[in-house]
Length: 229
Ligand SMILES: [Zn+2]
Image: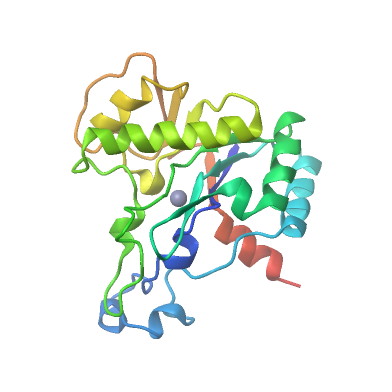
């Protein structure tokens, strides 16, 4: 069983606000119901603290699990500016770096922003969930390339080790993503589905389907679990 933890450093945890998808729930998809239990479907929740990371990783270590931690390279602020993960969460970033260099965890690229910047803020009515995916096929090739290059630069220069795994946000990626991946050191795409707009077989990049044999968590799951007494 391979364990992966997604959404680390992603502002999606703050801005992706919608109600749970049970029947008739869209009727209630307006603020503040969408951020209140039991209607709250996703955000907001807080980034894991350094202490929570220490607790979580010591649990994995004790159980001989080497998790893949999928990090979004930048937090998107309200005004669309980007703050790199090591700057936004220095304590957590340094701890994860130490563990990565010790070989206790694997770090994966979970995009630059996790979202379509400028469309990321919650709406008063309705869901903004679709904009909390980053690599839609309708976006120009240049956007795919820019986001992959910039995220790799931030992650590899901070972690001082090659990052070779790419985990697309919300399992959405496309032919342009693949073409841009070829120009980076990213060699594997892990997701529960193939490209959105193509069946083309890839050369030089491996697709790993995580539908079976994987436990895919989000930092949200750890946040909720660690809160329990
Ligand atoms: Zn994600």
